[in-house]
Image (cartoon, rainbow, N blue to C red; front, top):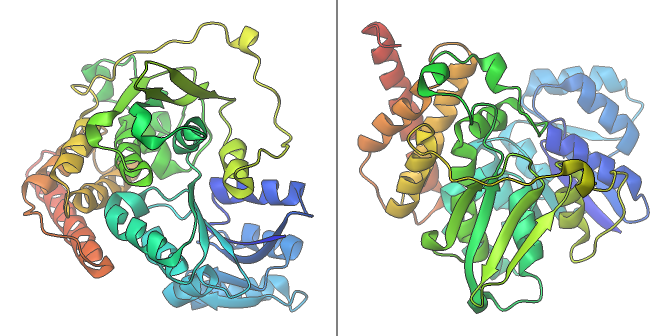
Length: 391
């Protein structure tokens, strides 16, 4: 019986994780849940899975959750940052699914590793911002860190049974998002509603916008570097509109191994929890006859500048990936609120990166320092542009 705590239980990854757990009650048990603001859904999850503890954002949410539960469930309700960390480090949990969106997931994920928990990682920002620190701590604590992202799960599967030194390169696939065939002129006028309509995947708003800008693929490239001990030059990105091949690994003899499946996060979540086994799911089989042709193309970094900025941040290293991520989170939020246009997202990130003097990341505190600086500068640049009529 694997005892599991889920950080971000009301998001799309969290809900899919609970479906996997519910399908195998003899293999998995929920010990802790942590959510943001969706108290109705969290209350429903607590009633169904009866975790030992549940964490919410603040005291108001905690009180609201207690009223919804009306004392009928023995779950302890905790709140705030410390509540989140408490769920991440529960003594009764042995595995933590890290599915909080953005930089907010780094602290509790790192705390869970330090507490000796195995990690199923959906929060790519943890590796983007603090990859070397996280890998060092994973090795020190002797815990397992397994990816939940479909692309990194595919790479993990393609690496099984093969010496790492035989790897020539990794081929990271991307759907290209809803705007892959748009011109720059068309992209100037896209709305948040259009950006949130992903052609293949059902995801949260932030990651969906990142997918539309291809920033998501840039973040995944940085994550892959640390997860699999790769050089940046070994990671290549391919646009694959069908989202059937989730990624590939090419070996030195020219062999390429690919992992295929329908575009549903149930598969990588299930594999992260059952690794190295493949347990049954309720998903339909992939019908290749129905899929027909599989296409591939090179990403256009002229149109999708976020990808180029992520590559630049990866090459610079040190604090720059944290700055990239922090500025991107600010830019995406401003776009979703209608404050800036879609093409202003990379412009705002680039301004912030150019203003930054990279420094060595040797602690989580330094990581968060870079993140806070980036958020403040990005917000200042956005406000200045608005004031001078450029936003």
